Image (cartoon, rainbow, N blue to C red; front, side, top):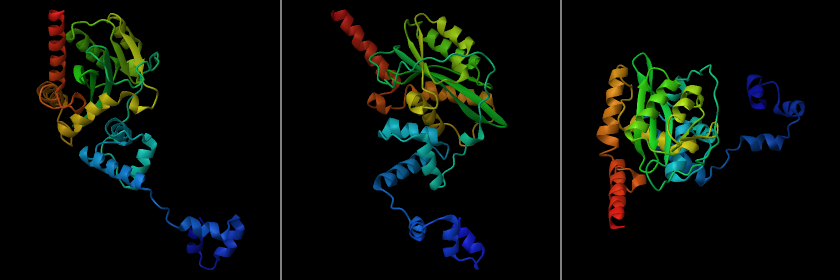
Length: 293
C-alpha cells in the first residue's frame, strides 16, 4: 500500500507514510526483498506442472493433490496445490467451468470405514464409487463408476445427462448383478447427494450385507483410486473438446473400459498387469488351491 501511494503521489515522502501507517522503515524494505524458494517447493511445482501438462491442462487442484499423494507420496492440500498453480499461471480448462446442482432431498452421511485402506486381498471386498462430468457439445453429461479396489477393475458404470441418485444407482446395480450378487461388500464414496439420498440408500439395502462408507467432506485423498481412473480416461481417451453428444460419449466410455482399461492397459498398482489379468490370476490360484486341499 505504501509503495502504491508513494508512486501515485511523488510529493508524498515514504518517511511520512511510514509514520502515518506505523510501519518501520526496515520492515518495509525487508518485505520488498524476494523470499528464497526451497528445493522442496521447486520439486512440488515441477511435479504439479508435469501432472497439469499430462492432463492436457484439464486437471484442477483437487485432482492434482490426489495424484501427488497417490503416485508420489506427497501430501499437499488442494489449497496449497491451487496456490502453486496460480503462481505458475496454470488454470484448469474444465473444472472451474462446472458446478453440480444440489438435490433437494433428505440425505444421510456415513462414517469413513475404509479410511484409505486401498489395498485389498480379494475381489468384492471393497467397491468405490464416484461421479465425474464429461463435456459434450452445448453442455455436460455425467459418468458414475463402481471400482473394485482389489485390481482397480471397473465393475459398474452409467452415463446420464443428470448427476442424480438414479445415475449412481444404475452403476451400483450393474456392479451387483455382473459380479453375481456378492455378499458383504463395503461401498465407499464421497458425500455427494447422489450417494447420500434415500433412493441410493435403498439401492444399497437391496444388496445383501452391503455397508456404506464415505470420505470426509472435501477430502479428495479418501477416494484417490477412483479419481485416478477418471484422470486416466480424460487424459488417455477423451478428446480435449469433449464429445458431440451423449451417445458418442457413452460409446467412447464403453470402448475405453471394456476395450482398453480392463483388458489392455497395464496398471502400476497391479505390477503392470491389467485389472482383468490380476483378477484372473487370483481366481485361478484359489481354484487350484481349493482342488489341492
